Amino acid sequence: MIKVNKALGSALIVTSMLTLAACGGNNENASSSNGATTQPSTTAANGETAPASASAPAEKIKITMWSQFADPNSADGGQIGFYKALEATKKQFPNVEIEHAGYANDSYKTKIKAASAANELPDIFFAWGGGFSQPFVEGDRILAIDELAKADGTLDRIVGGTTENFTYNGKLYGLPTNIATAQLYVNKELFEQAGAKLPETWDDLMAAVAALEAKGIQPIALGAKDRWPAMFWNAILNLRMGGAEASSAALKKTGSFDTPEFVEAAKKYKELIDAKAFGERFNGTSYDDSVNMFLTGKAAMLFMGAWVNGQIEGADSLVKGKVVPIKFPTIPGGKGNADEWFGGSGETFLINKNVENVEAVWSVYKFFMETMAREVFIAGSGSSAWKGDLGDTSNVNPLALQIGQLSSTATGFTYWWDQLLAGNDAESMFGALMNFISGKIEPEAYTKELQEKINSGK
Image 1: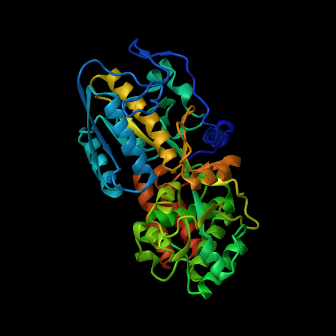
Image 2: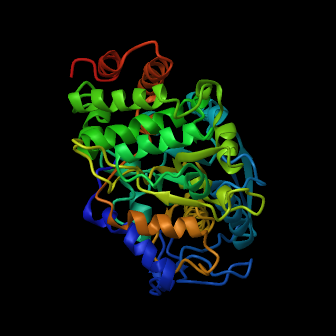
Image 3: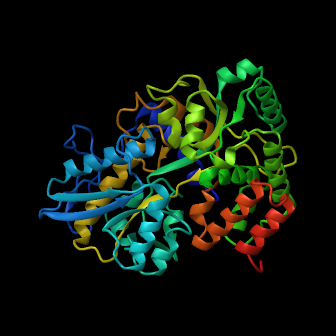
């Protein structure tokens, strides 16, 4: 969870400027933690400009890596960025054998937690910040990287405010890759067919839902079967009604979920459900099926993270060129505003505390992280959390450029609920949420249940 500071608030402005101007990075040499000189910007083995962090170990070593990136052929921007970064890192460090294993989202979460419990974590592994990584830190499984990152100037190349979700008790455990946002994607062609306007307010949104429904067009694609897409809607409605500060306080256990504003947000959610905005069978629809529904023009709107940009603008997409991202509409009487976003910087890779050859692994790790930040941005899936030259941005996904402009005035962020809440709290949240959207409990009972199960005694 992040309440944005001035540095993070300007991060997307910086990225937008870098996108258009491709400004150069810092060319001063920095001394690495092992005394070797880290060159500023070299030519990588793939012919592209390598990040300043490239410094190859002399001896041959093997590094094991696990991630939630299981499909090298995916059009998802995060998957594209990961595999490009992985290949670039292998080429940059020919003496290093990187053994990667990728797993689908839910199975990955189960596997990495089991590996931690058995003290059998890989050398480097993907993680989310906040509550997800906290047990690894408290279990003394992760290498703190404060001194390493300070000694060689790595922290100077990171956009301010983007490491907060990876910092525990004043110590840093992971570097960021990108600044992710969720936005409302709108199929302009379907809106024109229904005679609906792009929604700026809640009334606009409900009018569009009614107009689309009248034309036999499903208004919004939602894959609630996987739970977290349903959470996205709860989160953004809470942001609009209660604001980023109140949302942050509830998730940090310093505030309450059971407030008039959040009850009203739940009522707005129910209003959408009752209006059949998500169709009749959204509870049985998977995330993949909902995205496919949007990509094939069978639904007019999708509220989702920027990782879908690559799919929307993909060569085989039926909606390429027809979609525009917009800020989620404001709600009259709400304490939030259009410049508060669901998202932020919360994905990282962590280093096993018991890893051998720490300095060599660190050199590989920071190169990989900076490269992935650039590649994910170029693939159109979020702004880079690293300063400096982003390389050739002429082919950057147009949706990513539009999102960068939209979010350049951001004043607050709330990160993905299920990653910031610790394991049991996340499951309690999902249990209450699914009961609510299934019609088993009313808005007032829902917010009370969240408060009782997650913030008991607060």
